[in-house]
Length: 99
Image (cartoon, rainbow, N blue to C red; front, side, top):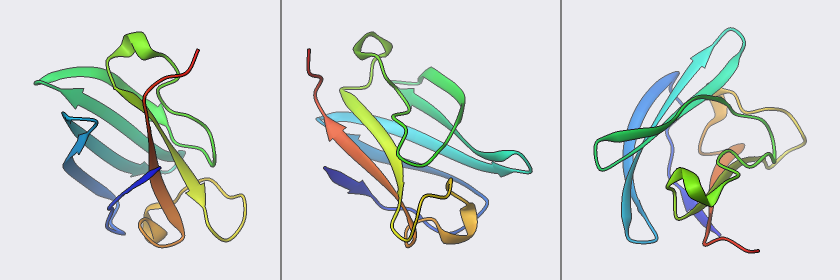
């Protein structure tokens, strides 16, 4: 798995190459949790996904990401919070899809 570098801020947009595809990830902290949007080739393929601990965010190869991503709490089992992104809460990428 690949760790996607994040900063502990409440809103951020980053571009990262995942399995040869440039993906734009936008994260926003809201009162109800951390939410993610995913874009590839200027096309949004996921929007407003609630980020939870150890829960795959994409879940379907047909969506367009060449793999899947999840957040992992390195100190317990809390859902991610912007105040500890990149340290306690890691965004992990798993390339490819399995049948």
